[in-house]
Image 1 (cartoon, rainbow, N blue to C red):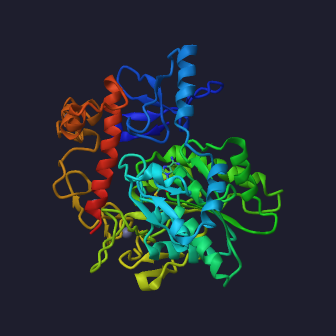
Image 2: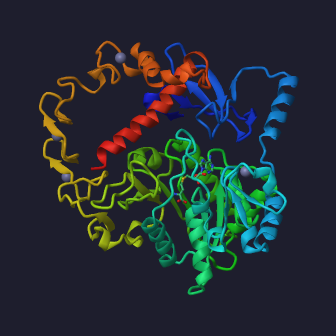
Image 3: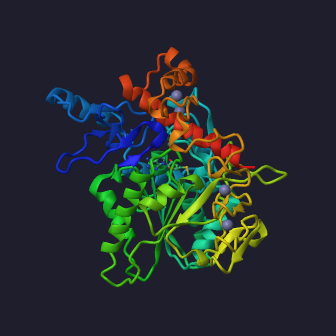
Length: 490
Ligand code: SAH
Ligand code: ZN
Ligand code: ZN
Ligand code: ZN
Ligand code: ZN
């Protein structure tokens, strides 16, 4: 079970031979609201955390009538994109052969238009597209801004180039880009330069707009929370053959999932990909796991390592172009909380000296300049980019803002509720010592306060009753993490 701690709901393990019902985003996930009286389990969308995007809800023990089942299937069908991937490819081929002034892109519909279609978009803002722009769909397309499920945060140039250069240095010839459209695009651009041997790249992403620009061998419409291929068996075969290293071409995966996503379903999908890779290796490879990089905030480290014990967190800070919190400014550099998690040997991933990283011979990895080696802990302890300090009593390094508290017998923030063990510290929500956060009566008040405007507008959350609250809590969990991230990025 995945514990979403503060959130009050957990990911549950489905019973064998009971397949999860499908929403338009493929098989749903089974959740459980944790409560004293024992939780009731329910299915909800794996990809969307907002009712606006997908309002699927079903109790685990709910009987679904045949009529409702049919209606659901109809609904799922109606949510399919207006063009198939094959149709998009045919359209693209026509599009590239158009004269320069005929190449139009509808910014409202986010669609490349063919002659004869422009009239239908006459009230929309159209723009001419150059062939250079066609090669940079991640710049042409408007980043999705759905804060809850699907915000797209694109790599800043320096991070994108760092990733690509690293993969080249490590000798990878095939890159599986999971939710990394900008890296995919950069690989294709690099191939055009014809300076080095070409690299192959396959993009798996839930954003179907990319099907307009890439062939069926270059892009699969994919949900990384349930390993679902919208293109069915044929699309999954594309991945399968991409993962074969028959010509000795080493393959690597680079994934940059939405940060609000649950760790366990992601780890599950990545494990499945690794298994697929292994099945393709005819016993030839001595490596037992597919090389992978998973980009995620550092405070998820325990969760990720719990699911994927062979992974290590690197100090490299990933920068984004359009991220409100993590962007580095023009003047000073703002620190990013986003890191690389990888099963590739850390010492092989050279972090750029000019950006302030150095090699630690004891730890055998590259570390951030402020991450000083502690001879007592025998490691470079910092996780958040600040210089941590050793506490002799706790016998470990702690965050710089922490002080050792004699009463608590541990290091903590100076204004921590003192003299109480962690267990006794009561509610993290309201500070009361009489209950824990999960049972906090003010939780609802807080939620209404935070999400009240929504409810007023009539946009109800996915869940009715107690689970409704749980879901809201889940959102506020992500919000809290984002806030924490902001606070920690000095
Ligand atoms: N930094 C990356 C983009 C990361 S944003 C880059 O510059 O290339 C997260 C990406 O994951 C987006 O491309 C988004 O479309 C995709 N995504 C979001 N939810 C997804 C899901 N459930 N399955 C697959 N891809 C998803
Ligand atoms: Zn339009
Ligand atoms: Zn130490
Ligand atoms: Zn201490
Ligand atoms: Zn409380």
